[in-house]
Amino acid sequence: MSARRYHLTSYGCQMNKLDSELVESRLRQRGYEAAADEASADVVLLNTCSVRQHAEDRVWSKLGKLRLRKRQQPELVVGVLGCMAQEHKRYLLSRMPHVDLVVGPSAFGDIDATVERALERNLHLAAEREPARTKHEVGGAGVLSVDQGVSGDTIRRDVRVRPHRSQAFVSVMRGCNMPCSYCIVPTTRGDEVSRPIADIVDEAQRLCDDGVTEITLLGQTVNAYGRDLTGQDATLARLLRALHEIPSLRRLAFITSHPNFLSPELIAALAELPKLARYLHLPAQSGSNAVLKAMRRGYTVERYLARVEQLLARAPDYELHSDFIVGYPGETAADFDATVAFLQRVGFAQSYVFKYSPRPGTVAAERSDDVPEAEKERRNAVLLAAQEALTVARNRALVGRTVEVLVEGESKVAGRLSGRTVHHRLVHFAASDTALVGTYVPVRVTEALAHSVVGELLPADAAEASAHDPVEARHA
Ligand code: SAH
Ligand code: SF4
Ligand code: F3S
Image (cartoon, rainbow, N blue to C red):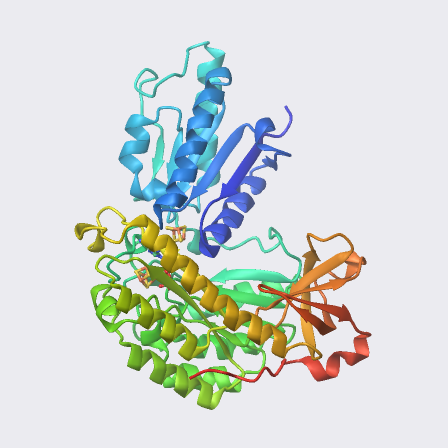
């Protein structure tokens, strides 16, 4: 029998994508192959996200299409994985009979066995020519693996299964214990669980032995790492120092940080460790104290600014990235104006801006979603434009300078490759030699665009000058 084929789509954040890598590696170990496209797959898996309604709507619509396909192909296995599996488990199992698998993010460690069970069942039913129309008819529920199952973090990772030769994500903790009023993540991902430093270092070492040179550590509040590991003195700063020792590692980054845990110990590590990427993703969410309080973020604008000043005093070459939510319940025009002013004051290099989306069950969802959609749109556009102006100014300041680029792949424009600087800035340059992918090359910036810069590839010996592109910090 030919190998069974799966098709897996990720709808969520970086952690969701890393989970998908784990799922793939489990399936491949069991002999499954990636299907060339979804239409030729025996198993269709959706790794889902609940953070905003829009993310869920994409999956509901996809499930609608799969329902039709399953009428023609009853043995097809349809699996909903990840945060929506956790959030909507009952609905999925009772109201979506064409869904065979519902697997939450903390039960990916034995996903291969779960998929296998569902596939066997469907094949058995198809062989008996029983229409596998509803689970009730076939005498049992679909396979549910949500509140129990094997956590992926306890599995020894197969480091060979990864999308990039030189870059890898490493999960350092799961879950989130923060009380942010608007956020579904603590519900879908559960409590914070940090991995021991030794496990993380072992995984990173094996990745580096296999050719990885850039590692990005992942956690919802990555700088709160270790606080649940009592008695082990595990902190992000200590973890960074341990990973920094791996000789072949060249760049080390981590996302996402919470302003409350930007400690003096961490700032010292950021200032002292040369392999660290020079950006800090430190979502502010709002620049209004009233909104921050309602969001239960646990800091004020003043406290955020003070932390950033402490960081930049020690490490002036860091750039700050943020997330903002516009149209939070009760956000006034004046609150919003304060957010625009705050964004400009900090001088963020990059920001994601999201329109508030009420998530059922959260504290904020109890309040009226009172900012009209058109006004959310307007605030979204205004804040994005303010960010773009800052980004372009930073990009322009780079013109004429040489930056070190880790080449990630071919750019959308033919004849160009692209990659990223230590500041996570996207750089495109003319070159067609794909052997450069995964290497570090010097590029002289010639043109600044809104979301990237364009440059020319220099000979390898020009690399000296470029290890850290020293952009003038224009922060508070
Ligand atoms: N743990 C990270 C990110 C979590 S989700 C952090 O705390 O920064 C990524 C981003 O989605 C958040 O930073 C926030 O800006 C946005 N977000 C979360 N819940 C949202 C909601 N209900 N509506 C709109 N945006 C939301
Ligand atoms: Fe959500 Fe807040 Fe946790 Fe981030 S820190 S995942 S926004 S609850
Ligand atoms: Fe979405 Fe879950 Fe990530 S809700 S943002 S996939 S943690």
